Structure formats: C-alpha cells, structure tokens
Image (tube, rainbow over all chains, first blue to last red; front, side, top):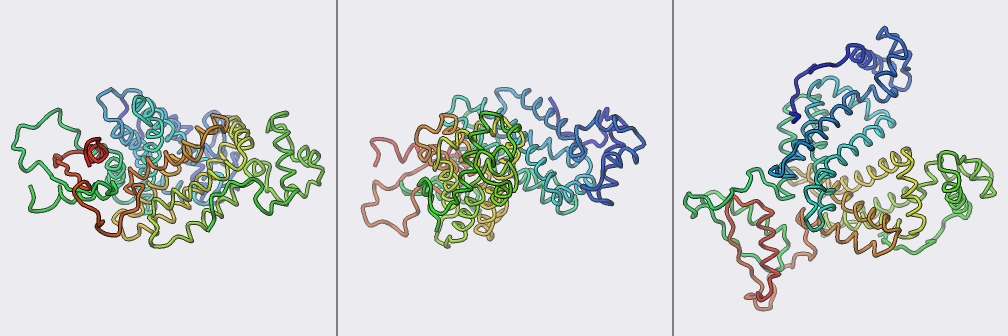
Length: 245
Length: 245
C-alpha cells in the first residue's frame, strides 16, 4: 500500500531528470515559458537533446514531472483497498497523495502554480491531469458502489467533490506561497465532502455501545415536508449544542 | 432571463456558419477529424477560407460551435438571480442550459460525443469548456455563500458536484444515441446533488401551514454520533413510510 509520505527526494529519481527540471525552472521565470526552448534547457543542464525526450515527451511534461508517478501511486493505493475500507474515506486518502506530491517541494509547487496561471497551454495540461485523477477516484468508487441505486452517479459526484475540495485547499495553500499547514487545510476541505456524502470522521460502531445511552441520543421533531438540509442542520445543531449530553 | 428552450434553429444563426458546421460534420466521419483540413471544410461549404475564421478561431471550435453562446446564456441567467433564489437550485437550473444546447440537436450531439472520445485534442478542448462552466457556477455560488463559514469551499464543491451529475446524465443519454428523456435523467442526477447539499426539491414554506399538524410531523431518534447520512436515510424512510401520515 502506498503511503502519502512527503519525504523530499524519495528514492530513485535519476540525476539527469532532476537536472533537466531544475534547468527548466531556472529558465522559465527568466525568459518566460513560451520563449524557453528544449535546447535552452538541455544546454543549461549540460546534457544532450535526446536525454530530454528520454524523460519528457514534451516541454509541457517537464512542468509536471511527478504526476505520472503520483497517478500510479494513487491507482496502486486504491487497488490495495479492502472491503472494510469506507469508500469515501479511501478516496480522500487517495487524494492526499496528490497533496503529498505538492508538499514535497513547496517552492517548486508555488513556482509551477504561477506558471500554470499564466500559460493557457499549461492550464489545459493541468486540467487533463486533474481529470485523470478524478477518473481514477470515480473508477474505484464505481466498483464500491456497484450494488447501490445510482451507484455510478454517486461515484462520479463524490469523485468530483473530492477533487474540488482537495484543489480548493491546495490552491489556497499555493496562493499563500506554500506557507501554513497544507495537510490541515486539505483535511478540513475533505471533511466537508465526507459530511455531505455520508461518511463522517468516526466509523460507525459495530453495534450498540455499552456505555449509558442517555446522553448519546438526540430526538428530532421535523415537519414531514421539511427539506432535508433543514433536518440535517437541526441534527447537527442539536447534537453539538452545549448543555446537552 | 434565458430559458433552457431546446427549439431547433432558434433565432439568428448566420447561414454561412451553419453551412460550415454541416460541412465539417459531413467530413469528419468520412476522413477523420485530423485529416480533415479547414480548406476541405470551406470547399464543401462553398465559401472562402476567411469566412471560416470569421466564425471559428480554429478547427476545434467548429466542433463545439454553441458553447460560447451557452456560457454567455449561463452567465446572464446567473446574473439575473435574485436573493430569493435558492442557490443550489439556481445552479442546477443553470446547468440545464447546457443540456438544452445538447438536446437541440441530438444527432449532432451524439456524433460530436463520438468524435470527442476519439480525438485527444478535442477531449482537452472539452475539458477546458467544462472547466469554464464549472467556474461560472462556482463564481455565482461564492457570491451567494459569501457569509457562510467555508463559503468558498462549499461553492467549489457544489459546482463540481453539479457539473459531475449533469455530465453523468448527459453522457448516459449520449451513449444511448440521444434516445430517451435527457431532461428526466439530468433532473434525477441533479436531485442527487441537491439532496446531498441541502436544497431539497420543494422550497421551504414561508411559515407553519394551516392544515392539521398531526400527520405532518416526523419524530426521529438518532444516536448523537450517528453519521449524517444515516439520519437523512431514516428521515426519508420515515416520512415516506406507508401507513404513516
């Protein structure tokens, strides 16, 4: 099982590949992304042109060097899930792998964020990567929800919501120049999705608990035609109200 | 206010523009998208090359000729919202404008769907269009949720969920060759999002109703640590249970 470890410099990255990335990100701010050529990058890195294309299919790919690895990690992580894993929690954990990749190198991630905002082609590239993450999450959820009514619909909606929440927190962290606790921001955002889609933080207990039931129970009175959101709001307010329970 | 009207040939589309679209979609299945040139399209349409670029910035744009109009309609529709419009309902209605555009011409939409699945460049183009719809919905929701805790997060998540639900139903309809009731499928899918994000189908009544309250009330007993989904499930089951009310 892959872990969302964010240790910098993990494992076996080839030094030439790293040198190409470093050269590219030295040149992009100086010359602009569009005006930096692959020849410029290989010249600065001190390697031949063929070395570049051994590692990166195009200039765009050097901007996002770790997404393929991260997609593979995510796929492996989801494939290693068991039947006991609560599915929404599992895709939230899978999304955190993406955060881990960004958090490995905050300065690089912030620089890339700025570049992506400025260059429409990179924005399009990023959208296609995000779409692949979303499809990986949705594919896993479709399997887990296969027996539910509207399982495919629910899978797609939850996957999109998880990606949106993750990216909301990630962008907020990037806008703050990579300062602050990205993990806490993402956890908070993903908690929002989990409460909407019915997988609250504590897993349900496997039966009635043995401690006194009195304080553990909430009684709600609702109009039959009340909108669901109102009942949820009421429930949340009642169960967290001070002086009760 | 724009309406999601699906009348074919609505209004003032220039005939040359329509001829270019028709020519393009006659050639794409015959020759393939990549091998069809703008010159081929203008030759079949019987117009000059400059006419093409007067209407379409690129060959990709002729594949999605109505998205700009639809995005403008959506923006206008959201801008015309009042404070009384329930925000999640409003973005669902806005999403239906996109469905309306597809339903205007099912045969064309199905053909484009096939093309988009086959040509990666068109898939990327479509992702960027979908992203613009999502940002339009999120922008509106950010305004409406501005005073809520986590308003921006909620706006982004709801917009993504609405787009995912809409597209799930739209793709299902397109895969069925544009047969069946696209509107009903999309309504069902959007209802799923509205129940998750707290805007049930009937708008809340403006006060207690005058008819007898006895049958109108549901009493729920829930564990304080129950997941919200369980309470919602219980509420839905109780209020619709036969023999009650």
